[in-house]
Length: 220
Image 1 (tube, one colour):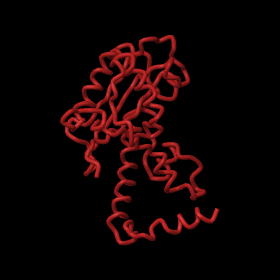
Image 2 (cartoon, rainbow, N blue to C red):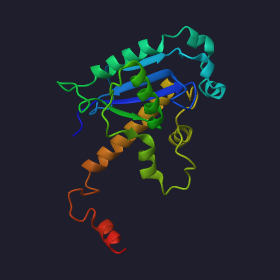
Image 3 (cartoon, rainbow, N blue to C red):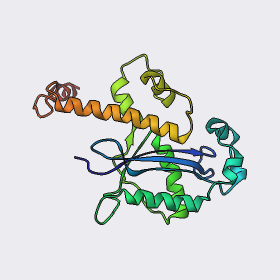
């Protein structure tokens, strides 16, 4: 049973390359692993002033809609990343607060965000490991397992998810909206999995549970 806090996050950046570009907005929600609701003090949000305005990709700014005027008055990179690291550590419930008891990270295309977070950690946090290395809860994996045989799904992008699940798209491509919608979909999947696990529809303890799949593999 998982007792570690789950942190669902999203970032907005000045471009696609974490070696060149920077995070300019981060939104994260810390979820209780049992109830899947936000814990006390469970929201972190900040705009972040880029250290190099000349590296900003205009296309990225058009997508996220963040203005240069907003960024010029936002807190600096080092300040925000230190605050974020402290916030994540608050949700590490282990006595020794090691990386093995660190929160589990979740998100949509979260590998992209983690690439930027790793660069920021190396630059501002002496390479501190903020999250447990695995598992990483990637929403797209859940979507693939459930809908890989459904021809109505043209993609697993968040906009497609909103359309499929009846979620309003207004405000999308900002970190807060994207995280909130991702959490909603994660909750639905987790509750579905738990319902199936506790039902009598599938006997996970049966020796026959994987028998058909194993037999299929042995035929080749």
